[in-house]
Length: 207
Image (cartoon, one colour):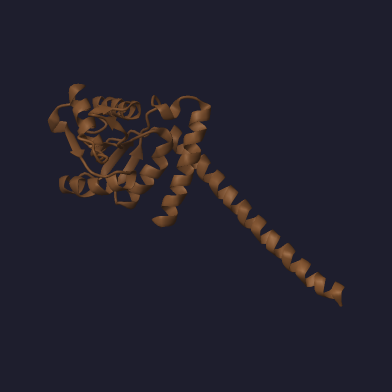
């Protein structure tokens, strides 16, 4: 009787282990597939004629753009010079205690580098990608701007484009390859893995 009673328990245990193994394998495959997609989109550079070039925000220090933000702004300047879009939109708010916003810092930088004020719009709110794009939505809608070229780091572009599409924009991506996120393979891998996790988190919480 003892042997008979042990056999169902072993069968049940094998099923549990198999189920856990299948779930772990599925999670690994999903994450790996997402990482490949992040890498693929980060290598694409689309520059269709659009209503606006939108620069995703990054850190600023007392009105001076960080290395990451500078790389994004320089790339947006290049796109504007190539007539990809007639206007550049900067987005991003400020942290508690900051006197300057990411968007305002970006606008000032682009003005200093030759873009006239009439060709610039700053949306000075939002402390993450989704909130910044959401804040930009009514501002751009009022102007009838719906097609965008998103400028950000390569590995941030898939998540940014997905969010923009979910908000009703028609977005293309043109990443900068001169910022810190592109400094060497180990750094790139770090950002790809981080963005893969962030993308999956977004898809779960914003299906």
